[in-house]
Length: 307
Image 1 (cartoon, rainbow, N blue to C red):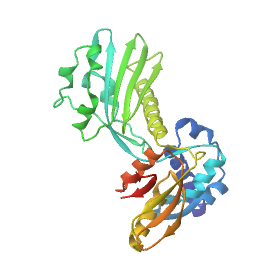
Image 2: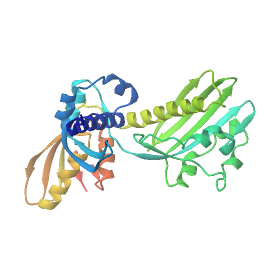
Image 3: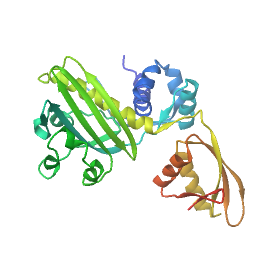
Image 4: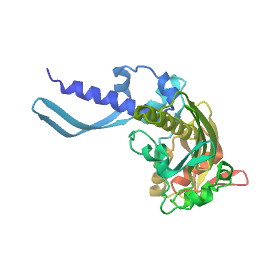
């Protein structure tokens, strides 16, 4: 009764679900509902089967599935859903439990010990835990009041990042309040989650809170990178070259930037190529996107140029 085609179709559906979990925040992911196999197949651009094994009545294979970017964006637009750039990020994560006048840090803190045990492959955040043995943080923290004076960016830089989550966990009886100060690539947000009837001796209770916190932090990162396709702005952008290799390289970058909805060559001559670009973000965000690929987007006398 084995059907290889059924396995391929299952792989398409599983891959599509993985894609959506990476580019949609949790609330939009829940809205997507069931997508028919016919719709999913329409969005697949190509696929490859690797390490295929059929032995002892068991089938196993690894599938690489590539989706058509423009079709996926159109699919989400039709459902009024905004997607995010699925970019991974590393951040310092420092949880502190506050119970009365007592502070619990590092290995005295159950969340510090358990945070990295379970990992979802679709999480976009790589968490870095501060090391008690080499960090001066314990010397800086005497009470809850001194926590606010810590320069977390300076601390994070020691771990080769400027991103951080400082998480204060206020324990009152069986209630835990998680107050988090988040800084992701200079985007800041404070979040607050409350859990009732908490049992810190229960593995399931701890894992449930960690799972929900990670969803909250992933949603924050996704929202910072959200592409609002209902916003369409236009600029004329000058690339000071007519070299075909440079033009080809630049246009590959334009195709990779999710915020760019459409581009075309407006005019060109022996010295430059001018593009019309339709994009779905603000100019500063677009600048940062070009910077990620080694290009500087500058404005001179009302004209946008690439350096």
